Image 1 (cartoon, one colour):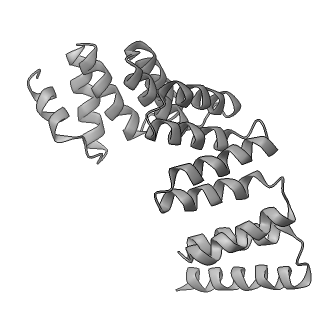
Image 2 (image 1 turned 90 degrees about the vertical axis):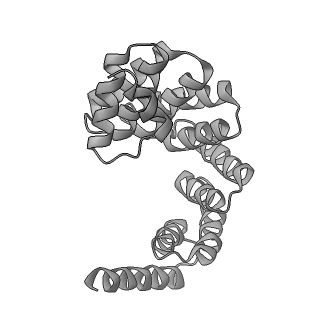
Length: 206
């Protein structure tokens, strides 16, 4: 209950700040993020649009708006907002990462790789972008780069279950069955839901 009360107080403070200074993009942004946390998505969207009206260079607000589009299954809207985020801040890793994710969803693998490589260049500890990049390499058939990228993720965070799952798949492709088994077991041990067909394939090589 205490946390909910804190959120309500935070939202009230942001509303008061906006009432006192309606042109403050940051207060609109803070309120929008808090409303997303409360799952008030429609109001959050309106408030975040006001944030970028007040502060057109607020890259984080475009990313949040993109996230709201993604919730509704609107990939093109998500892409457009994230492209806007990197127009206003060229080295914004999160924007590049989201663009790469959307391109991958749309099956545009080369564009996805280009964006994800930028994301990981601008933020060298961006685990989710590295994991998505590894997937993109796998989809392109570049197994070696896929394995290297997932191993890099595990160097940063050894308990990143998605990377263990991805390595299990990549090592299967590479016919390195011993390593595939090891990483599959590790992913399962961490509570990751490995696809049944992958487990079935792995079990043939135990």
